[in-house]
Image 1: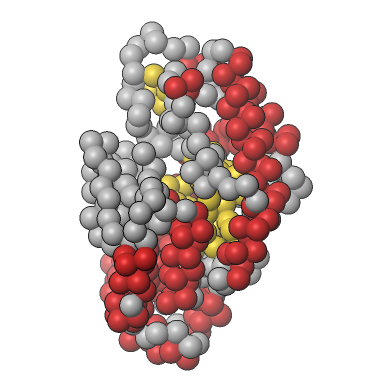
Image 2: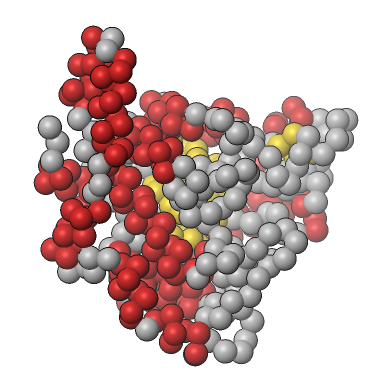
Amino acid sequence: MTSFADITPQLERLAIEVPSWAYGNSGTRFKVFGSAGTPRTVHEKIADAATVNRFTGLAPAVALHIPWDLVDDFGALRAYAQDLGIELGTVNSNTFQDDDYKLGALTHTDKKIRQKAIDHHFECIDVMDATGSRDLKVWLAEGSNYPGQADMRGRQDRLHESLAAIYERIGADQRLVLEYKFFEPAVYHTDVPDWGTSYVQVSALGERAVVCLDTGHHAPGTNIEFIVMQLLRLGKLGSFDFNSRFYADDDLIVGAADPFQLFRILVEVIRGGGLDEGSPVALMLDQCHNIEKKIPGQIRSVLNVQEMTARALLLDREALAAAEAAGEVLDAHEIFMDAFSTDVRPALAEWRESRGLPAHPMKAYAADGYQEQIETERVGGTQASWN
């Protein structure tokens, strides 16, 4: 029987990167909503990210998005983040908000436009060199809307050529991480729609090219934990983008729609060594807080991942393996559900206090006054937004 004390060494290793864009304004494709206290600069985004880490101890790095987070001196930005107790993490490219990329970027038929997109990724690698970032994450809003609009095979070939040029440029300690998405904005075909396509593309590049799995980027009913297992088995699961979905890529707080799915995913992460010492698997949030306050939204999210990780670590794997081997279907299911049903919140509260963290981070943040402070001070200027 696994006790909470047994799982604390692995729980100590849990680190969840937060995204800079989660602190800016966002919304639907119809409207981006403003809110008081929203950062106007990347420095204010980093300060908010550091606040999440201060209350949870779970978010030691913040991901950047280029060009949304461009500054003149990334070395100075790195020092600023470190002064606040966090690091700059994954660098995310953006080839989906330029008119030239309407019909594709890395897959475009025009070589000049493809080179423009490749050069943007070279710029992102320069940012990585200055910030000490390991991962370049690539998500492509590319595909077609109508049959006959595009040569799908030709686009795959051009994608490989473009990614190969980018991969050749990354450093020996850096990785190219290719994200996939079932649809949007292309609705007839998407160039990287699933884990298999991403896997095929990164496998052709080399060992330092891996797959990013976004938990909101799948068809309804998809068994995401099977994909997690398979990519871990193949040694190609590079990172997660955690969020939650009810219908499509909702980018809501992780675990909101289906906490059991999050638990099942983390069971496979742990089983596959994703939480072992030195694991290359990076955990990150990819969320937009449209109606809730942004910092509490991130705090709630990392706490949800921590809670489900603790439950997954408590799974009695020896008993489960014995039941599976004996063909005891209901016993195996009961053992699995016992772990999911365990209330770990009191133990986690005590564990946080023993490490100098607030037992209840959400309540502690609400009482801290930081939210009121930023709403008072951040007046004027242009609020950050993905639009």
